[in-house]
Length: 137
Image 1 (cartoon, one colour):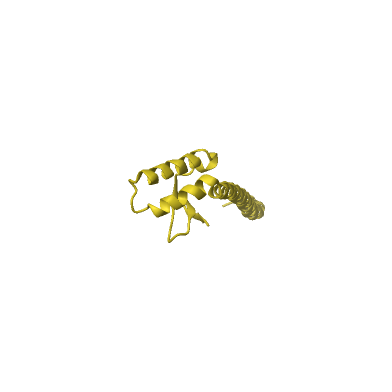
Image 2 (cartoon, rainbow, N blue to C red):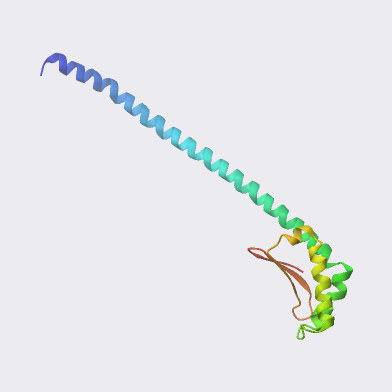
């Protein structure tokens, strides 16, 4: 191997080693910066979605509480409780129809998958079942 070729290889090695080192450091820094930026965006998105969900359930809770204190509910829910063992009774069916009408007229409650009137041991409350169960006493 000639001295000229050895010198060319040596100069190339001297030039390429710092360049490769610089590129690897730059790549690592860029990768870490990109990861941090993406994680920050995802955290912001999660916060935004959580606030939207909180607002939705807050609105739903407020509307359910309004319905819960309405005259029709206060009048017909005790009838359902009293006749719970006899669901074919005409008075039970009338009270159930009245309560169903109240729920159909409440727009955001209508969007729930299931809404049912529950009467455990004399206490009345509304239970909303979406993907999770939320109880409002």
